[in-house]
Length: 173
Image (spheres, rainbow, N blue to C red):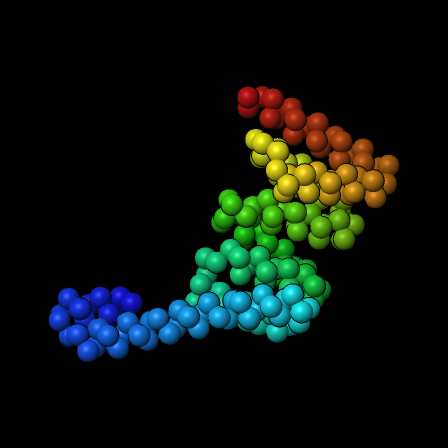
């Protein structure tokens, strides 16, 4: 689209028109690719979805939506380290999707047998909400499930960590 802008400034109208059409076609194609990948994810075609999300991200590296689904696809494929990297990137780069990314990261932690880490992630995400919302309630529900599934020993570790976080939050306030 920048090329079309330059051609317009140079009054090279046919070239500007051609460049704009190419840019529009590329953008439409890119949008189509993410929609296709999401559909593949929904149909549980995780390998195809992963490939298409990666392709989409090459031209749209800041797309939190694509990166979130990429992480979820990788998680379904058992590519846990890659999934965690992509979900953590969503968490750190997009505040609007941080809680969603945290939720899925906590599920991975819990599946890997690290209930204390999962509980801490959820607790921190919940603490970030000022008001009640369906997402906050989902995080709370997940926290309860993780705590119920954990052993007594792990629960004590979680409680100790949560008390420490509460103390730090009290000091900050």
